[in-house]
Image (cartoon, rainbow, N blue to C red; front, side, top):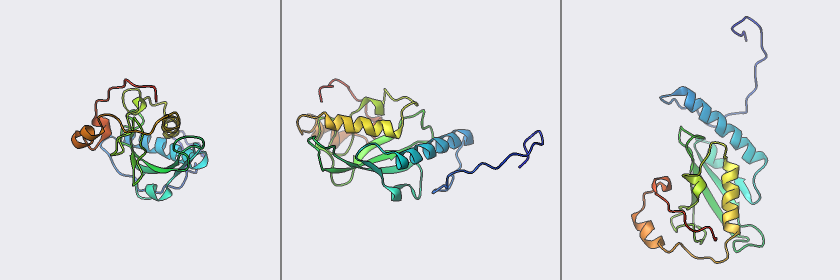
Length: 180
């Protein structure tokens, strides 16, 4: 391949892409997002947080939606329990946080987890930073569950589940309890 100055460069090998590229209004933002997600996908496959594994089937058709299988940490209230986290990434990732929620048949009973899978965790909204990653979000969720002393739903669970938006990022969370 010739560079602009006529110097021959070796062709760079990239990891096999498991999904088709999609065009977006701003190609540079989409390319940046895809590159970042590809990097994070490889990191999660090669060095997952304890008790977490990427559900490989979930990324075969699209890089913008992942399912991460999670097992409760040993020595905690959730030891041996299995959960699934759904990550959805917008074209603005990593500048915009991913949508993250529990999904599947087993939603953890926790004071910051609603029965519909929505998670009240500040790094998923107002405390998000592009320096954070899928791995750091997974570690925060493991830590949140592991520090729990009593399995119970949030006090407003019934009302919230009846009235909330399907996208937990559209909720204006009130972060007032850091005891669990």
